Image (cartoon, rainbow, N blue to C red; front, top):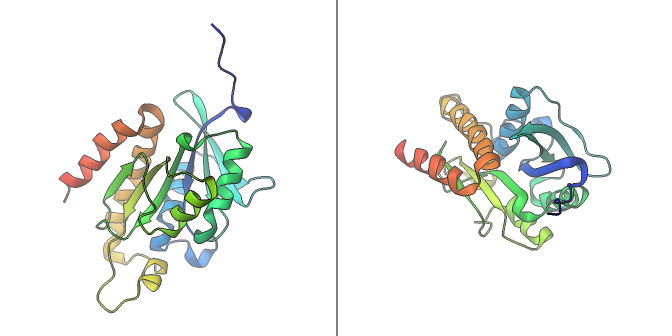
Length: 204
């Protein structure tokens, strides 16, 4: 039997955290995707480094016996797709080997929801990715940040840091999101959905 050709750079899957670059946005609600990837890289003791020729930072982590690529676009959120497209091309990966981690206004704070595909749901970072890679067929892990109070503009709300009273729920969500990512890599989307979507519903 002919052996399957090895992927360029031996990377098997790409996990993208969405957010805005710069210290001013570091702990904002919109940057929870960044926070998950940074926390996971810290846990595995690897450093995110600038991708050569691409506006993104990446780190390789060995999971399930293979190298997986974890990346943060250095574009602003609304332009994330151009970086994602370039990373996929550079590492010879397809859309079905992509997981996007992002915030979600329509999920209550701390709730997780992973799906194998779908529309952007109004998330401009996800929308940019769909437009740039010309498909909705990629997995996404959404982390709930809740809706703002009446009278607070959404654009302001998502760029604000989490409140002190929200930090416990946020930290728990980040830890669960890391577990979910590893499950997705090792066992696929269906297993991750069964474990983590259900867990979130049970915690309501």
